[in-house]
Image (cartoon, rainbow, N blue to C red; front, side, top):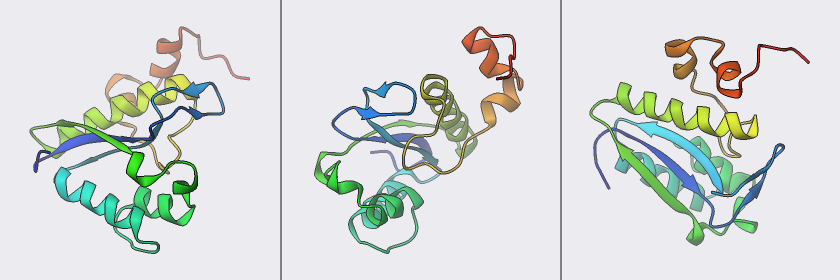
Length: 137
């Protein structure tokens, strides 16, 4: 695992039903860090020790008892190294965009969104990806 910057995805070993569709990859959390190894260690600590702080997704995993449905030992981590924290943030933003385009919501352990793709490519990006003309419902 790289010690530098990067983006990561933590996923369950089984599909997760979402409001729209089923996430076949089981993505629980998308994140980024300038110190990837430490960030993932923080997730492990917070996810396995109820009440520990330092990684919000890990804290949420423990607090909301996600292990009842997604045993900690079965979780998977994938990451992409990046040269800088800014580059890691851009990669994370693209991962969020792919997820939200499919499910129209954040992964279960995420609580905030990375707006970088919209800032870079325009606020109508979602409409362009979906091939819609900005219809409101």
